[in-house]
Length: 162
Image 1 (cartoon, rainbow, N blue to C red):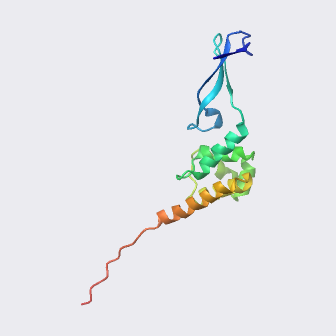
Image 2 (tube, rainbow, N blue to C red; image 1 turned 60 degrees about the vertical axis):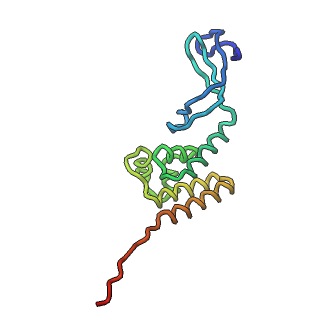
Image 3 (cartoon, rainbow, N blue to C red; image 1 turned 120 degrees about the vertical axis):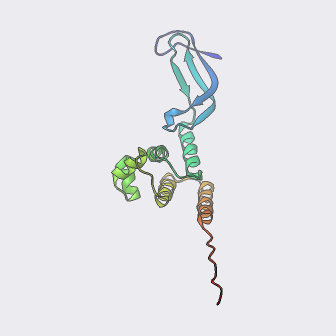
């Protein structure tokens, strides 16, 4: 642990940084965990300060992970992608060609977007955020695989000639 100096809240000199795990709820997602993050903790008042270097790059990496996940996007992930593009809800709705109320319903888990809309959200984000070509290639592969996985074989008995 490294002594930082004075706590910005209570003025105590018992403020130290340590590298630890951080449940990154500030991202708006409940499943993001960071390791080896420096967290300053005041032993007097309990104030915590999380130091996240290169936060813009971190948010892009989280967004890319969301884009490449195999399951459909949930509301929190759609909100994360929208906010990561720095778009207001009505701007995002306009980009997607839907009503702002629809986007709100997705983000608040009152309605699930269709599979087509899920793809539209991912592709719109990819286009607007100018994601790396390697990520775009993987997204294309995922879409093609998803199509192949969704195909159903039909077994139809052939009637016997009488």
